Image: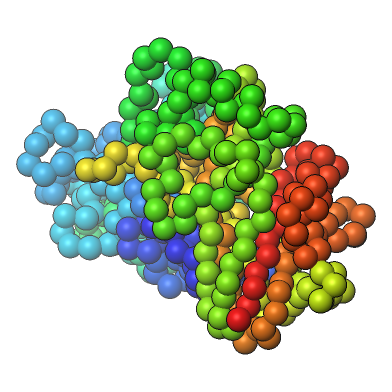
Length: 453
C-alpha cells in the first residue's frame, strides 16, 4: 500500500493519479497520472472529494453528488442496478473504457456536489475525455443559498487535454459545488473524475466520516487492549495492578520500553513486560553488509490517562575499548525506526501489519479509517498511548562495509552531550537510560548496541 523506497508512493489514485518522488522533501516533486509534474512535494491541499485510492492527507467529508442534466449510456449507476449510485466521478479511475466516463445526453453536463460542511477550496481538477470543454465552477452555502461563480472559462480558452487543473486563487468557500461542462459542437460532453482540494473544519455537528473498516468491539467487563482493537492482547484491571506492583520505580515513568518477539507473534498476549525486560539494551550481531531488525514495545504505565511520547533514533558511533563512543558518527551504519499499524484481516482477526515512518504513512484521517490504533500513531514519531496500552516499533539497522567492532546508537541530548551507556554493562546501562528518560520525559530513547563481526 505504502512503499518506502527512493521513489516512494505518497498518494495515488487507482491508476497512479498522484505520486511523489525522491525521499528528501527538498528535492521532491509530484507526478500526476498523466505525466505532468509539480516541483513542490505537497498536494494542493487536503483532498475533500473522497476519491478512492488516495492515501494522502484528506478531510473525509462523505461527499455526495447528483446530476442536474440527464445522462446517456452508460448511466451513473453500479453495474445494472439502477438503485445503486455509481460514484464514478470519485472512483479513482481517471481514464479507461466506455464505462469510465459519464456522458451528457445532449449539450452541457451539470453536476452538484454536497460536501456536508462548508469547505475552503484551493483547487478543483477534472478529467474529461472530451478534452476541450467550457467549464463553470460555482459554490453555495446551502440549498437555499445563491450560487457564486468562481470560474467561467469559455471553450476557446480550454486546454486540449483530458486533465484540467483549476487553481482557485481566491480560495472560495461553500458547502455545495456545481460543475458545468460543455464540449465543442458535435462532441459528447464526458466527465471521468473530479477532485476537490482545500480544507474544512471538523465539529461535533460535522465530524469526519471515518467509517472505520472494523466495528467497535463490545466491552464485557473491565478490559484493556495492549494494542487498540487487538482482542488477543487484552487484559483486566486486576492483571494491570498485579503487573504494576512488580515494576517498582518504573511506574513513575510515562512509559517503559521493552524488546518483543521480532519474528513471532507479538500481540497474542498482553504486552506487560516483566521487570527484568524493561529498558534493557537491544543488541544485534551483524555482518559487515546486511540488515537486521528488532521489534520494540512502548507501554504506558498509567491505567487512567493516555501518555504522549516522542521517539527518535540518532546516529551510531563506534565504541572504543574503554567503552567511550567516538566523537563522530559512523558513516557506514544507519538505523530506521517505524511504527506498526493494527489492521483487520479476512481470516485471522486484527493483527499488526503495515509499518509507517514519519515521511511515509497514510493521511491522518485514513490512518483512523483503516487502522484500529490509527488515532494513537497518526502523528508518528509522536505517539499517544492509550491507558496501559502499547505501541510496537520496528527497528531496522543496516551496515555498509562497516569495520568489525562494537557500535552504539542513541540520541544526543539538548545540551549536545551524548547519552550513551558506555560498554552497556548491566546496571550502569540501565541507570544511564533511566536518568536520560527522567531528564526529558516526553522523549523515550533506549540505548542500542550493535556488535559487527
